[in-house]
Amino acid sequence: MKRVFSGIRPTGKLHLGNYQGAVLNYVKMQEEYNCVYCVVDIHALTTLSETPVLQKNINDMFLDILAAGVDPEKAVLFVQSHVPQINELAMLLGMVTPLSWLLRVPTFKEKARQHPENINYGLVGYPVLMAADILLYRADLVPVGSDQLPHLELTREIVRSFNSRFGHTFEEPQAKLTEFPLVVGLDGKDKMSKSLNNHIEVSATPEETAKRIMTAVTDPARQRKTDPGHPDVCNVFKLHQQFNAAECPIIEEECKKAGIGCVDCKKRLAACINSTLEPLRERRAILAEKPDYIEEVKQDGAKRAGVIAKETLAVVRDRMNLK
Ligand code: TRP
Image 1: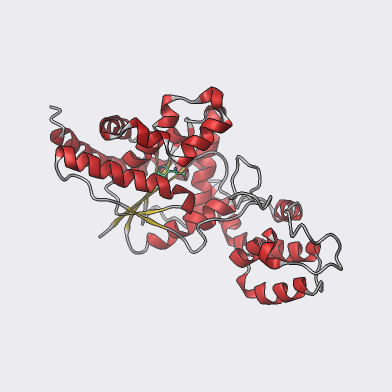
Image 2: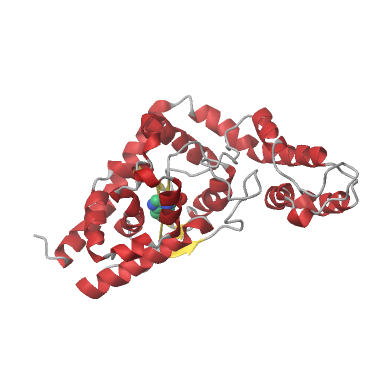
């Protein structure tokens, strides 16, 4: 059976972008494949500011992923640093990864631009660590959002580089995108992301959700309710397409003839998102009362992931003639 691996950074609570972009596939794929899902705490350390809240973030991520429907009976769910072999494999893969490959990765360039004072070795090595995740667990398929495709490409290059130097050891993994691999943020400019504060957390209350949606940018040409709107350039309409497909034709028509204003349109979006997320939010509230269960899931996950990790590392050490 094919193996699936994916990682998610514990930088805060799960938001609609992560959910639609990747976690929906986590849930689907556990029915068909051997799935390994990882909360990547070491990756979170590459941007240091989260450290004080790291454990809370890990816990929130576990609650969100479990509430979204990942079933620890079907999939392995664990914390990256609980399986220490990851560090050794990342170090060893670094030996076959030219620095020039890492310096041209778009996410690195972007982070280096945003925080020129904090360009550390770990940040440059981020994609090597990610390749190590995927290869340590020998994944065939990697469910991710489209922003991660350059990292996947780099992982495949590292595989080829390793295999050509040490003999065929790893297979090249493939990305698996969801139907909506990129969710736009409320600002309408960028992808939904916590760092841009243009996101909606899946575990937000219905009131918070509605309030945030009210702040969303819409068609800039539509100043008054009586102006006809242009759904094709409207950020809120894009969100309707992703979360409220059934109502889209009528909303499109009404917007174009100014039959519905932006406030009403946002209210409908909020209602639909809230009803979609209601079961998840109910499950999350129940799980939040069971810290012992969450701890058990983490420990059991690390044990099962550790078995695979040790096997892989033994092969890699042998290939590299480390005895
Ligand atoms: N870089 C990914 C992100 O920011 C997280 C990640 C780390 C990951 N390791 C991974 C994703 C391995 C897929 C596979 O979303």
